[in-house]
Image (cartoon, rainbow, N blue to C red; front, side):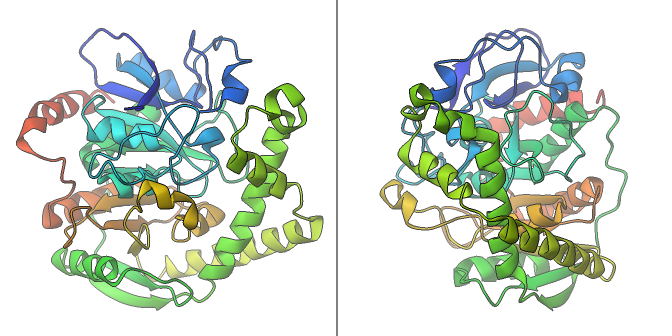
Length: 395
């Protein structure tokens, strides 16, 4: 297994935290999952800003978690560092880019984990590995000391087996954070004419909303497909600007994976006119979602349109068509597994208003109780849940 790029010794009684290896940990090399970075990197002089609360609470950082190279991909397949094994089916991709973070909590080598999400990189591996993930509001969690991908879209957030673990990690990321909101009662069910979604997944999402006894308002959003395209333009262009030095350095460029290098170079070809169009549409689309969130408390849709494919089919499709438009709008979103007919549970994605993380967590707790939650919420994990409950009050 390749869950961690670097395992770290830890002592104490706080929760065990896996840190995605594009986040600086003092004294440890940050690799961003790339040989082109690792071979030239020095140990970090200081922790990333977002780890301040984790350190203050006495949590134990147990390792730097693996990821899709440079966080620039959603399959989680990493030829250099190895691909973390999907805990539900080792034949299938774990999802990315926060692959190691999701696998770490699912396999109980960490209680909670920190990932990053630029176009779905927390929510997709959470969905494919049967755990929970929270993409935070843009700008809520500081990103100093985090390897950048796309500066106008990057966020950081928690991954955990249960919603309670997401709350615990939020309290470490933002000391003083509390879930004071009541669960939502009215949810807008997004229907996306431009997307092809596995009918079993779509049906499972509807069943989860029904079991949770929400008032469900049907919403058709034909603008979704364009939002995905415009977010792709912004993301690839900004990824090129953040990482072009790797491509343009002959010694480093030759160490990049072919797929990531090609994607970076594609970002150099996004024109100023395309960026202007993308930013104008971003404003329009954000206003549209805000308007819906004045009529309903949360939006609901699947996290992914399919179950994780086999490893050999990883490059045949994209996995962020249901997630990246939320990054474009900079809103928070939470993914959690719900009951379904497959060994790999479907994943419900809830989208909240700006800074609506408390509402998302309260609502997800309600959904989890109604639907059963992660397949890893089994009796052997009771000690883990006890540790989380014991530390959450100290946030």
